[in-house]
Amino acid sequence: MSGLYPFEIECSPEYALLTVQIPGDKMLKVEASAMASMDRHVQMKTRLKGGLGRFFAKESVFINEFTSHGGVGEIKIAPGPAGDINHFSVTPDKSLFLTASSFVASTPDVQIDTKFQGLAKGFFSGESLFIMKCSGIGDLWFNTYGAIFSVDVKGDYIVDTGHIVAFTDGLEYSISKVGGYKSLFFSGEGFVCRFSGEGKVWIQTRNPLGLIGWADGYRRVQASAN
Image (cartoon, rainbow, N blue to C red; front, side):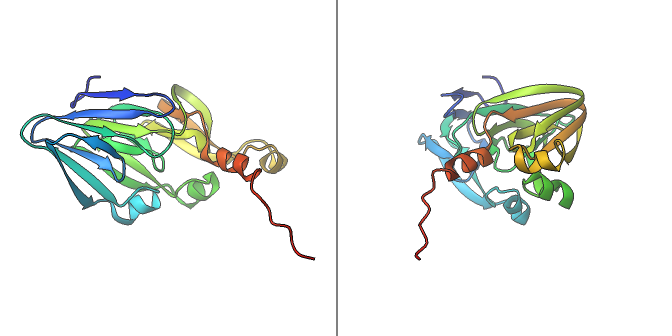
Protein backbone atom coordinates (compact mmCIF):
# COMPACT_ATOMS: atom_id res chain seq x y z
CA MET A 1 0.00 0.00 0.00
CA SER A 2 1.11 3.57 -0.63
CA GLY A 3 2.41 6.00 1.95
CA LEU A 4 5.65 7.76 2.75
CA TYR A 5 6.91 4.29 3.74
CA PRO A 6 5.68 1.26 1.73
CA PHE A 7 3.54 -0.99 3.94
CA GLU A 8 1.17 -3.95 3.93
CA ILE A 9 -1.58 -4.96 6.34
CA GLU A 10 -2.19 -8.70 6.49
CA CYS A 11 -4.46 -11.08 8.44
CA SER A 12 -7.31 -8.56 8.74
CA PRO A 13 -9.66 -8.11 10.40
CA GLU A 14 -9.20 -10.44 13.38
CA TYR A 15 -5.42 -10.55 13.91
CA ALA A 16 -3.97 -7.83 11.69
CA LEU A 17 -0.21 -7.68 11.12
CA LEU A 18 1.52 -4.54 9.82
CA THR A 19 4.67 -4.83 7.67
CA VAL A 20 6.58 -1.59 6.97
CA GLN A 21 9.56 -1.08 4.67
CA ILE A 22 11.75 1.52 6.39
CA PRO A 23 13.93 3.41 3.87
CA GLY A 24 17.67 3.51 4.47
CA ASP A 25 18.70 5.78 7.35
CA LYS A 26 15.05 6.57 8.13
CA MET A 27 13.18 5.93 11.39
CA LEU A 28 9.78 4.56 12.40
CA LYS A 29 8.12 5.18 15.79
CA VAL A 30 6.39 2.10 17.20
CA GLU A 31 4.35 1.51 20.35
CA ALA A 32 6.23 -0.45 23.02
CA SER A 33 5.97 -4.27 22.84
CA ALA A 34 4.45 -4.23 19.32
CA MET A 35 7.45 -5.40 17.26
CA ALA A 36 6.99 -8.98 16.03
CA SER A 37 10.10 -9.34 13.84
CA MET A 38 12.62 -7.30 11.85
CA ASP A 39 15.57 -7.84 9.54
CA ARG A 40 19.25 -7.19 10.17
CA HIS A 41 19.24 -3.64 8.77
CA VAL A 42 16.98 -2.38 11.56
CA GLN A 43 18.19 -1.17 14.96
CA MET A 44 16.03 -0.10 17.90
CA LYS A 45 16.29 2.67 20.48
CA THR A 46 13.79 3.22 23.29
CA ARG A 47 12.88 6.77 24.27
CA LEU A 48 10.68 8.34 26.91
CA LYS A 49 7.89 10.16 25.07
CA GLY A 50 4.84 12.05 26.25
CA GLY A 51 5.32 11.63 29.99
CA LEU A 52 2.23 11.38 32.18
CA GLY A 53 -0.06 12.42 29.35
CA ARG A 54 0.57 9.15 27.48
CA PHE A 55 0.25 7.24 30.74
CA PHE A 56 -3.18 8.71 31.44
CA ALA A 57 -4.17 8.00 27.83
CA LYS A 58 -3.47 4.30 28.57
CA GLU A 59 -0.41 4.28 26.31
CA SER A 60 3.13 3.31 27.25
CA VAL A 61 5.30 6.29 28.20
CA PHE A 62 8.05 4.67 26.10
CA ILE A 63 8.28 4.71 22.31
CA ASN A 64 10.58 2.42 20.35
CA GLU A 65 12.37 4.03 17.41
CA PHE A 66 13.42 1.64 14.65
CA THR A 67 16.05 2.94 12.20
CA SER A 68 17.20 1.13 9.07
CA HIS A 69 20.95 1.25 8.37
CA GLY A 70 22.64 0.24 5.12
CA GLY A 71 19.49 -0.15 3.05
CA VAL A 72 15.75 -0.72 3.26
CA GLY A 73 14.76 -2.56 6.43
CA GLU A 74 11.57 -4.51 7.05
CA ILE A 75 9.70 -4.62 10.34
CA LYS A 76 6.54 -6.54 11.25
CA ILE A 77 4.29 -5.06 13.93
CA ALA A 78 1.61 -6.92 15.89
CA PRO A 79 -0.51 -4.85 18.35
CA GLY A 80 -1.90 -6.39 21.53
CA PRO A 81 -5.69 -6.38 20.85
CA ALA A 82 -7.19 -8.99 18.52
CA GLY A 83 -8.42 -6.74 15.76
CA ASP A 84 -7.64 -4.68 12.69
CA ILE A 85 -5.07 -2.02 11.74
CA ASN A 86 -5.85 1.14 9.79
CA HIS A 87 -3.62 3.67 8.00
CA PHE A 88 -4.11 7.45 7.99
CA SER A 89 -2.10 10.08 6.11
CA VAL A 90 -1.51 13.04 8.44
CA THR A 91 -1.08 16.42 6.74
CA PRO A 92 -0.73 19.97 8.11
CA ASP A 93 -4.46 20.55 7.50
CA LYS A 94 -5.66 17.03 8.39
CA SER A 95 -4.99 15.73 11.91
CA LEU A 96 -6.57 12.84 13.80
CA PHE A 97 -7.69 12.13 17.37
CA LEU A 98 -7.08 8.63 18.74
CA THR A 99 -8.74 7.07 21.77
CA ALA A 100 -6.87 5.13 24.45
CA SER A 101 -4.44 2.37 23.42
CA SER A 102 -5.03 2.82 19.66
CA PHE A 103 -1.62 4.11 18.52
CA VAL A 104 0.52 1.54 16.67
CA ALA A 105 3.21 3.36 14.69
CA SER A 106 4.06 6.53 12.77
CA THR A 107 6.74 8.11 10.65
CA PRO A 108 9.04 10.63 12.41
CA ASP A 109 7.25 13.89 11.53
CA VAL A 110 3.90 12.86 12.99
CA GLN A 111 3.53 14.57 16.36
CA ILE A 112 1.62 12.65 19.05
CA ASP A 113 0.29 14.94 21.79
CA THR A 114 -2.13 14.16 24.60
CA LYS A 115 -5.22 16.33 24.96
CA PHE A 116 -7.22 16.67 28.18
CA GLN A 117 -10.89 15.88 27.49
CA GLY A 118 -12.18 17.53 30.63
CA LEU A 119 -13.59 15.84 33.71
CA ALA A 120 -17.14 15.50 32.40
CA LYS A 121 -16.21 13.89 29.08
CA GLY A 122 -13.63 11.60 30.62
CA PHE A 123 -15.50 10.36 33.67
CA PHE A 124 -18.93 9.99 32.11
CA SER A 125 -17.67 8.28 28.95
CA GLY A 126 -15.92 5.59 30.97
CA GLU A 127 -12.81 6.29 28.86
CA SER A 128 -9.53 8.01 29.62
CA LEU A 129 -9.48 11.70 30.57
CA PHE A 130 -6.91 12.13 27.79
CA ILE A 131 -7.01 11.42 24.07
CA MET A 132 -4.16 11.64 21.57
CA LYS A 133 -3.94 14.31 18.86
CA CYS A 134 -1.85 13.24 15.86
CA SER A 135 -0.68 16.18 13.74
CA GLY A 136 2.20 17.16 11.46
CA ILE A 137 2.86 15.17 8.29
CA GLY A 138 3.40 11.48 7.53
CA ASP A 139 2.02 7.97 7.98
CA LEU A 140 0.02 6.94 11.04
CA TRP A 141 -1.24 3.45 11.89
CA PHE A 142 -3.77 2.66 14.62
CA ASN A 143 -5.40 -0.55 15.85
CA THR A 144 -8.85 -1.64 16.94
CA TYR A 145 -10.50 -4.36 18.98
CA GLY A 146 -12.44 -6.32 16.37
CA ALA A 147 -12.97 -5.14 12.80
CA ILE A 148 -13.28 -1.46 11.85
CA PHE A 149 -15.54 0.66 9.69
CA SER A 150 -15.69 4.40 9.11
CA VAL A 151 -18.59 6.83 8.85
CA ASP A 152 -18.52 10.18 7.04
CA VAL A 153 -20.32 12.58 9.36
CA LYS A 154 -22.20 15.60 8.03
CA GLY A 155 -24.30 17.08 10.79
CA ASP A 156 -24.89 14.83 13.81
CA TYR A 157 -23.99 11.22 14.55
CA ILE A 158 -24.11 9.11 17.73
CA VAL A 159 -21.60 6.40 18.70
CA ASP A 160 -21.31 4.30 21.85
CA THR A 161 -18.20 5.50 23.68
CA GLY A 162 -16.68 2.01 23.87
CA HIS A 163 -16.74 1.63 20.08
CA ILE A 164 -14.94 4.86 19.10
CA VAL A 165 -11.40 4.44 17.77
CA ALA A 166 -10.56 7.70 16.01
CA PHE A 167 -12.07 10.84 14.52
CA THR A 168 -10.87 13.76 12.41
CA ASP A 169 -10.16 17.22 13.72
CA GLY A 170 -13.22 18.86 12.17
CA LEU A 171 -15.69 17.22 14.54
CA GLU A 172 -17.00 18.49 17.85
CA TYR A 173 -18.25 15.99 20.42
CA SER A 174 -20.11 15.77 23.70
CA ILE A 175 -20.98 12.90 26.08
CA SER A 176 -24.54 12.15 27.12
CA LYS A 177 -26.67 9.20 28.24
CA VAL A 178 -28.92 7.35 25.81
CA GLY A 179 -32.55 7.25 26.96
CA GLY A 180 -33.55 7.91 30.56
CA TYR A 181 -32.00 6.71 33.80
CA LYS A 182 -33.86 3.39 33.61
CA SER A 183 -32.27 2.78 30.22
CA LEU A 184 -28.88 3.80 31.59
CA PHE A 185 -28.89 1.17 34.34
CA PHE A 186 -30.95 -1.68 32.85
CA SER A 187 -30.68 -1.54 29.04
CA GLY A 188 -27.04 -2.62 28.82
CA GLU A 189 -26.33 0.67 27.04
CA GLY A 190 -24.44 3.45 28.77
CA PHE A 191 -23.14 6.80 27.61
CA VAL A 192 -22.81 7.82 23.99
CA CYS A 193 -20.71 10.33 22.12
CA ARG A 194 -22.65 12.82 20.05
CA PHE A 195 -20.54 14.11 17.15
CA SER A 196 -21.41 17.24 15.21
CA GLY A 197 -19.87 19.00 12.25
CA GLU A 198 -18.17 17.47 9.24
CA GLY A 199 -15.52 14.76 9.33
CA LYS A 200 -14.96 11.04 9.72
CA VAL A 201 -15.28 8.62 12.65
CA TRP A 202 -13.67 5.17 12.82
CA ILE A 203 -15.68 2.61 14.82
CA GLN A 204 -14.63 -0.81 16.11
CA THR A 205 -17.06 -3.73 15.97
CA ARG A 206 -16.26 -4.95 19.50
CA ASN A 207 -16.29 -3.18 22.86
CA PRO A 208 -13.66 -4.24 25.45
CA LEU A 209 -16.11 -3.55 28.28
CA GLY A 210 -18.62 -5.82 26.59
CA LEU A 211 -16.08 -8.65 26.64
CA ILE A 212 -15.40 -8.07 30.32
CA GLY A 213 -19.12 -8.17 31.11
CA TRP A 214 -19.61 -11.37 29.07
CA ALA A 215 -16.62 -13.12 30.70
CA ASP A 216 -17.73 -12.09 34.18
CA GLY A 217 -20.76 -14.35 33.84
CA TYR A 218 -18.42 -17.36 33.73
CA ARG A 219 -16.34 -16.28 36.72
CA ARG A 220 -16.22 -18.88 39.47
CA VAL A 221 -17.68 -17.54 42.69
CA GLN A 222 -16.51 -19.11 45.94
CA ALA A 223 -19.36 -20.06 48.23
CA SER A 224 -19.23 -18.37 51.63
CA ALA A 225 -18.74 -20.58 54.64
CA ASN A 226 -21.69 -20.87 57.02
